[in-house]
Figure (cartoon, rainbow, N blue to C red):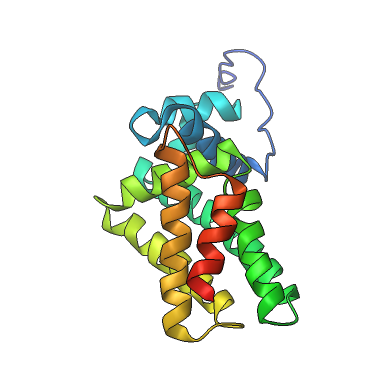
Length: 190
């Protein structure tokens, strides 16, 4: 006796090979965070921004907290690389001071997108220990870059000054000008 052929509900769709999807989701998360803030970031919004099915979120990330931590880690690593490059290229203390000024005035305050991500990370880290770990690692890396030219105490204090200048500029209706930033850094380091 012949068995009936299995029923087909139509042609089977080939499985889409998309090895970069996870990275695209992390990049999309950063875009959504910059546009809507952490409070407005959802699985659905990230999937929409990445142009992938919503199910991709739960396939690649166990929770929204996990993708937020990975996205903010990517952002922090990106900023830390700029610190490493600028300070690593400075041959002496005077050039390092100029590198710090450029870091603040151009790199940290030059991109509204990155500035919003930084502020969102600071606020979220105040409540979330996993994100606080991201900020701690970022601060440690920044201080390490600063310590190429400044002692450990000065590097820590300078790192705090840099963060303060960034937050002040992000939140102020009258942010400091590049010349005022230059003056503040020179005043601290002289």
